[in-house]
Image (cartoon, rainbow, N blue to C red; front, side, top):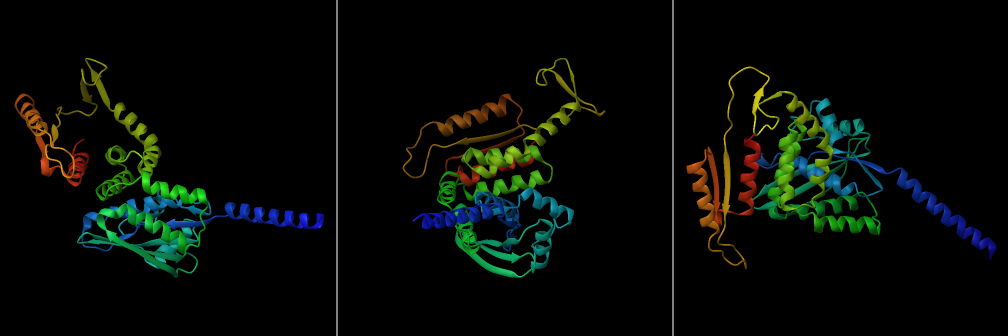
Length: 332
């Protein structure tokens, strides 16, 4: 009996050691930007958002080591590949070696007539050969769900067995973090601005996304990553401003250290009023009327240069996000 017990103990110990060894040597995966193979150039920016969402999901799996997007962006710039439309197997293999990855994941996506498709390719870094390919397809409005389906297919193709906790975490992220297709585009645009050094504008777009869903983890993570850069940018900007008349920039007069006349920026107003809601929401009586009165006050008693108004049927989710993104891109 004792010999059997010792044997069972040795087997258990060996299994535990094997598991511990596996967790300390996870498979290293690099997710490159997917190519926009459609005709709509405005969707090019989605490549970064899609990659980052996949990176966030797969980073929760202990048996995988996922290369951070910032590291990928750094290598792409070093190799002067920023303008590359897509990554062929040879280029992907080269990037994988520089990133210390075993497997590269890349692919393409396109949108047509309300249908969205994503195709993924798994490339062996050592040989440059395509190991596997897979894809998902569905309605464009269900982009978030498609990304989750793709994440699960990637895990299946990599023969990854999820623990109960990992599966629960992946399932919960699909329920708690869902964002619209429009918000995904804005999020992707924010990443592009951050990569180009426009940290403040990128942060503003991330906050636009978080208005819709405060639980969207990729946006919260990105804000944390750039918090130090935002502080540095603010400090540098403050160093170039002289105050006169008060220490309060609102009460006093801000003078640039550079000579020249002072200029006054433009004033913008985004006004939204909705009386008629779709679905089962009851109609209101005065929302549009109140909004128009505010528009009148701002136009007659204050100096506003541009009004953007959305009333009733114009005030769709997509249009509201479009106007907010336009403001972030066009005002300082």
